[in-house]
Image (cartoon, rainbow, N blue to C red; front, side):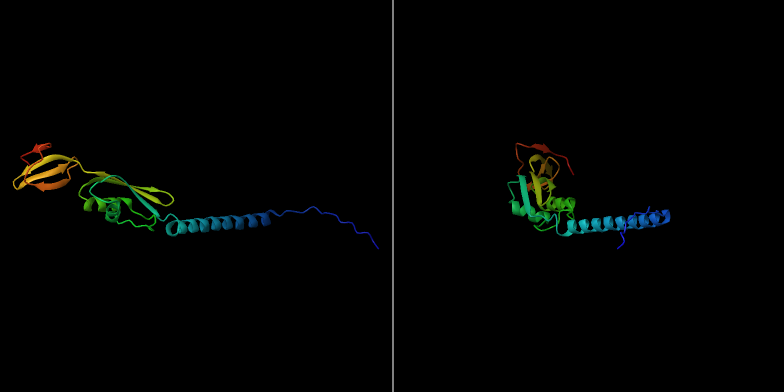
Length: 158
């Protein structure tokens, strides 16, 4: 029997062949990156970052925490990334008279914090039908016939 001896022949690399291989690899990597970004975006807007806890802090003694959350229109299970906090803030300020300011903060991955600042009466504004009790930022708190003596009285306002 003959002894067979293996030899390695030098492999010629064809530059054209190498370029064709690399061209396909770039397109493949680009497709993988696009698909991964699409999957991450879809998961973030549907399954991930849903609100599990809503925490109300601050001093709004006229309202319960549940009333403040209802006024914002935010519910447990809403997605934090799709939540329009400015719209929810404005909705709550329009419906809660004795609240001066509301800040809504996202605390990822699943908690939403609502900070509430109560209105403090600052002025009595006298007009022809009585007196308005107004906060520091101009929010009308109450319409009364007798002014609060501890507050500044403003007259001559139309």
